[in-house]
Every structure is written in structure tokens, then in C-alpha cells.
Amino acid sequence: MPELWLIRHGETAWSQSGKHTGRTDVPLSEEGEQRAAALGRLLGGHEFALVLCSPLLRARETCRIAAPRGPVELDADLLEWDYGQYEGLLTADIRKSVPGWTVWRDGVPGGETIADVAHRASRAIARARAAEGDVAIFAHGHFLRVLAACWLGMAPEMGAHFALGTASLSKLGYERETPVITGWNQSSER
Image (cartoon, rainbow, N blue to C red):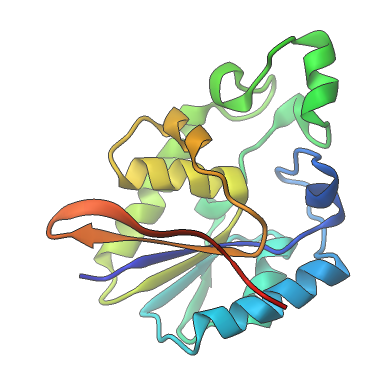
């Protein structure tokens, strides 16, 4: 059965500092570009039936540099969580006014709910399952964690338990007909 390859974009100045980076369109850092090139080697020339990519620059640059083999389509469903008023803030800063805050439990004012993100992730999963072969998705940390939870039939909040570094590769597939994680958070080497 086909696999779904999840590729988180390379490092940006914001991801390196820990800022919540939803819809702000920041480029890859030099390190992010180097790790994106290493991701290309990790992909190893694998042929994909479909490559889906978030339209945000950091995902597009990672996809371009990693150069996956297969038709590439930009898909707005793959955008990162809209963090609303928390865009660009550090968790520590948010917790000064909301002690113990976590995006997974408490959400974001003026942004998307976790149900909104899960709905978009479910549409991306449906597209991947309809493809005639393996599918690569170039997207963002929180979004991909929600997508993995949805793939497994779990509540989207369970994505909190799937750590995902920048410039990483994860794979979702099947054991017989049961959706499973076949690889998680594999880091590229420079």
C-alpha cells in the first residue's frame, strides 16, 4: 500500500528562536537551506505519484531544494496553523498572561481552532489516499503533527505527542489495512 511521506520545512530564523510561525512568510535560514539539500539525499530519488506543498515560502524553498521526483502541487490546505494574536510570540511570552498555555489545549485568540486544522489535514489525507502511489507532503510542524493524529484515527490534540524537528522526514503507511507510523522525525544530515 502507498505511503505518505511528511517533510517538515527547513529551519528559519523564527523556528530557530521558537517563535510561533503560522502564516508569516519567512524564508529558510542558511542552515535551513543546507538541511533541505540533505533532505534531498534522504529522499534518495524516490518517485512520488504526487508531491503536495504548502504555498508558504519556507515549504516551497524546502521542496525546491530537496527536489522530490513527481508532480508538485501547491495546496493551501497545508498551511501552518493560523496562530492569530499569538503569531510571532514565544510560548514563554504567552504564558506570562496565560499561565500553562499550550496550543493543543488552549488554542489561539483570533486564529484557527484545532478542529479547523484537523479539517484541512483530513482533506489532505483524502487527496493522498486517492493518489496512485506514494505521496510527499512539504508542510509545517504543528500542521503535520495534527495530520499524523488524523491519519491514525486519533483526536487531533494527540499531535502534541509527536515531536517534529525542522528538515525532518516522517512516513505514514499501513500494517495490513490499519493506518500506522512507519517512520518518524528522521533528521537529514548535512
